[in-house]
Image (cartoon, rainbow, N blue to C red; front, side, top):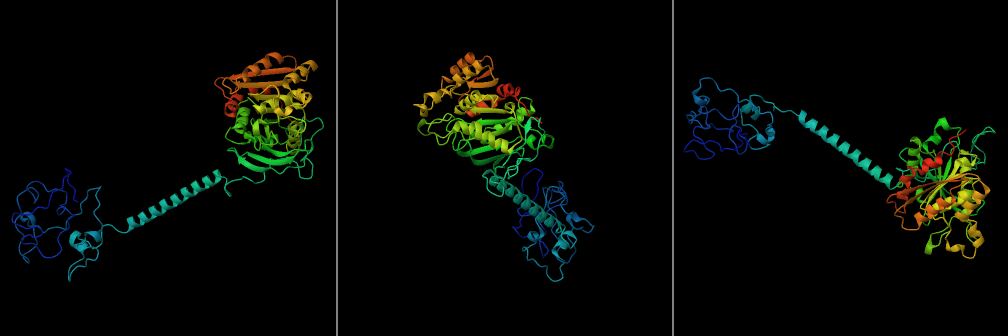
Length: 480
């Protein structure tokens, strides 16, 4: 289609009396080039009014064959070869489509090539360079597409933990650990506050890799003191592998879940952001760079409302010994820790909050602090039935009274409770505990979370708004 300045197409001009496709005095041979549906191109678009066949007076008929070339308007000068139409945004179809008869057109005997007839030269005005550029462009697009698809595939495989695009299941080395023969990686000075790993080394396997490159490892161990076999997930902050802290011991926090607490521990996942938050709070000056130990809380699923209170209930697995003896031993065997209780704390929610609170009050010589979120403050497992003496020995209220009577050692209890807990007794029970037992060696803080519900997603972000800072002020680490 030919270009029209006003945007309209016009049919080719035919002098009066001519039939379509036939003109008087027309020379034999190939017709001049005209785009389909248009008229023969003029040098600069539409001819001026009165100067050509478009809108002006009709031109005289062409002379018969052999009487000279056709000269429009009676011009004496020889007709020059028709110049190319130079509209910058117009590109005529390729020559194989322009030629009369299509791609297979061949000039007759003695006739010059079609391009020379029309344009005065034998070579097409457009060579093969644009075609080569087009091929290069297609190859570039194809390459970029392949790389993009490959990246999407790799990301998908990593997300679904499909080898080789994941570290899951690989050995985890936390750096500077013990050897497998039961010896520590190095010796420290007798007056040092830190403790080098004692060994033997535990074979931890990767379960997750965080964005900062730190890893969460897991191992199944059998506690030497409890006899219970269960999983423990561990994580160390990035600073633990920093050469600057190569001779430093780090504080340990034992993080306990709520609910069944078996066969997993929901703190070991990355969706709640506990590990990332520990690092964030440390860099903000609100917390310590805790190593996290995340053991199973119960020995079996919480079927029919039966659970174990993280305690040694007669006739049941010794979960209290598991949490306060075997798990800390595992951490001392594999990590640079702190000798004194100043480097040991608990954290837990719901049932895990109760177990952590009870552990600190029962063993203040081993643990200094706890963050208890939405906890019970008295044991309530049905498995205590018939074991009143043992139940009293694991009751936080009675343990707090005994600690006050003994006048120490000092412990730090950070509570946080939502004002929209599912159990409406949780908040008033904790408030009563704080009012009754905050005295002498027992130091407490209570954060009431506006709109807070009974779940870990409520508790994690609020830990950084008071509870973490409260216990970190009295904890130590990293220390040499």
